[in-house]
Structures are given as C-alpha cells and as structure tokens.
Length: 136
Image 1 (cartoon, rainbow, N blue to C red):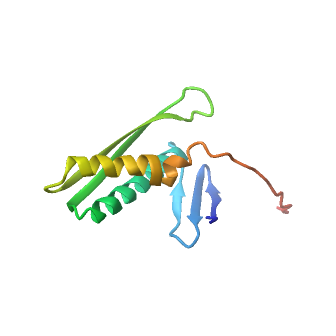
Image 2 (image 1 turned 180 degrees about the vertical axis):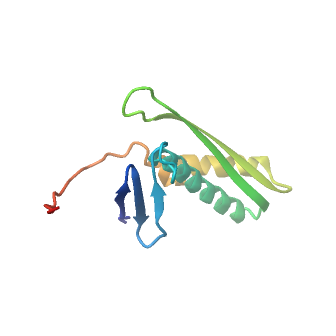
C-alpha cells in the first residue's frame, strides 16, 4: 500500500501539506508560528498512531474508557540532522475499572507491533527530483 502526500511552499518557511484526500495542514518554522514544525508533526504522528492503537485494543477488551490523552516529548541530537534520539510517551486513560495489565499490554502491542509511525522511524529514504523551468 502506498500513501502519497504533497507539500507546497507558500511564503517564508510556511508550507501547506495534504495527504491523499485528507484536510490540508500548515507547517512552519518556529519563527513563523502559523503551524507546527515538521519535527512537531513527527511527534504528533507518533502520538496519534499509538493512541489509535491503544484505544482500539482497549475497546476490544471492552474497557470503559471515558477519556484519553497522549503526552509525548522527544529529545533531539545537538548536531545535524538533529534527529530524535529518544521519545517519552505518557498515556493518560480515564475510565472506570480499567485494568493496569490491559493498559500495559495495549501499550506494549502498539509500541512493538502495530504503530507504523514508531516502526517507520528508521526506514530507508529514496529521493528523486524534477526541475520545472518557469519564466518570471
């Protein structure tokens, strides 16, 4: 399965991105402040991916979830490419009678088996490019 996305430069360091038919998102650098940075989007992607897994698994276990949050932080290397070197993910589950064993197992399955974002963190990258001549 191939998923496609595109990013279009708008101004300064602001870009508008869209994947498939999903809504567009604005990305920016810290100076522009019109949207998250690409590295913040990586954090949100990981958080969203693992959150969906954990919710899905807990629902299968018939857990009485009333609320759910994921808090994520990432430590970055000092030198370029300033990649993430470590993530800390905190899951906050609200509900009645939630089993710590079920929560731990749901998180473990997400992190080790199901979360594609976590699993993609060291995927190889191929590149290509095109140059389009434009007047003016």
